Amino acid sequence: GIQVEQSPPDLILQEGANSTLRCNFSDSVNNLQWFHQNPWGQLINLFYIPSGTKQNGRLSATTVATERYSLLYISSSQTTDSGVYFCAVPAGGTSYGKLTFGQGTILTVHP
Amino acid sequence: DAEITQSPRHKITETGRQVTLACHQTWNHNNMFWYRQDLGHGLRLIHYSYGVQDTNKGEVSDGYSVSRSNTEDLPLTLESAASSQTSVYFCASSPWGTGVFFGPGTRLTVL
Image: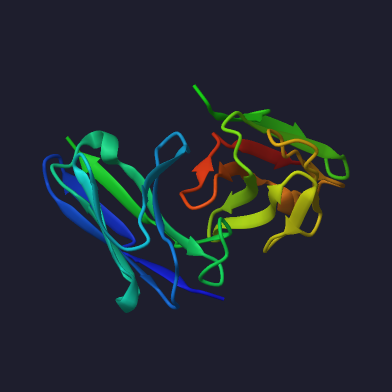
């Protein structure tokens, strides 16, 4: 099946710093999602981004489908950004909603 | 506001008992999914449904069943609970062509 690798596995920042999280996938996909799992366990949908770039406030994401990677940018980080960030792609590359998740990047933002 | 809810949020049961976890969404989404999240394995798909009366097995379906009698609900049943099924269970839903949205999760402990 498709493999999803995220880096770095852990990231520690001071409030106000910027960061880039990476997601590599092993096969062609027709969509990709980024999620934030907050410290209470809730999975929050950040971006649905099959290709190109999207922005939402301090967060933006870019997917380069032809090169099989996606990047999540967090600018001016805040303590509320702490948690685990997951990317997910369709199992088999195109199967809708049947997601294969990466192992996540654990982000800790210190005040 | 439309939403997706899960109940109970926490459950402790004994080995061998039948357990049903409820999932209800008011978005009128056709597609619904059940995932489990475990340390070391990330999120894995258990079952999914693309519409009423449609159910399909996911990656880790053994010991679980679902039924879809209406658009809003996809209950997950553990036929005979085992300690290996101790996990956090997430229900999710989506329309076609956009992202998957997750419920708050149910923490299940099988003693």
